[in-house]
Image 1: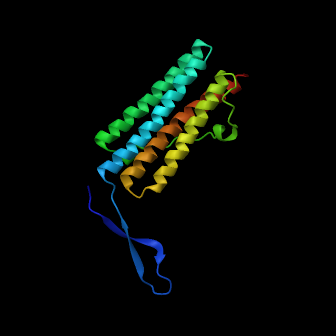
Image 2: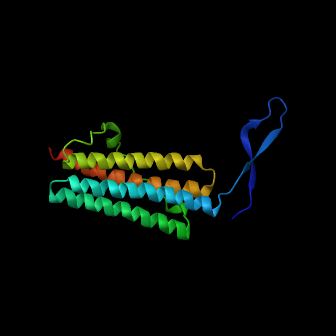
Image 3: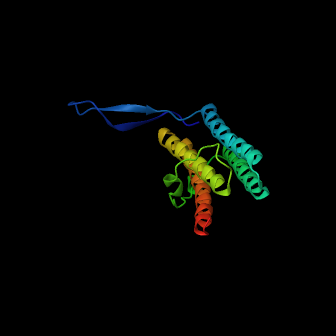
Length: 177
C-alpha cells in the first residue's frame, strides 16, 4: 500500500490568517478494499435473489426465461467484482451509457401487481436505477481513487443494464402494448 498522502484541502483555510490547514488523506488498506468489494458482491447477490424469486412468481415460460437471463447477468457482476479483487481496476475501462430516463419518469409499481412483461421491465429498470444511484453516490464518498474508480465502474455497468431495459420497454410500448 502507498504511504499516507497529504494534500491541501480548499475551504479549510483559517479565517483571516492566510494559513492553510493540511488535511491527511489516507490510502485504503487491503482489508478495507476487500470489505467494499464484499459490500458490492452482497448487493449483486441480492439482485440475483430478486430475479430468482421473480422467476417463481412468473406465469409464462418466456418471462421465466427473461428473468433467468437477468439473474445470470447479475451473477456476471459478481464475477467482474471478483476479477477486480484479483486484478484491480483500470479507470480507462469505464464506459458511459446514454440515459433514456424512462425509469426516472415511471412510478414504482406495487410488488403485488401481476408479473407482466411490462412490470418485469419496470422492476428491472428501477432496480438498475437504484443500484446506479447507490454506486454513483459511493464513488463520490471515497477519496481513494481506486475505490472511487471501482464504484464508477459498477455504476457504469448498472447504467448499461438500465439502458438495456429502457430500450426493451420503449420497444414494447411503441409496439402498442
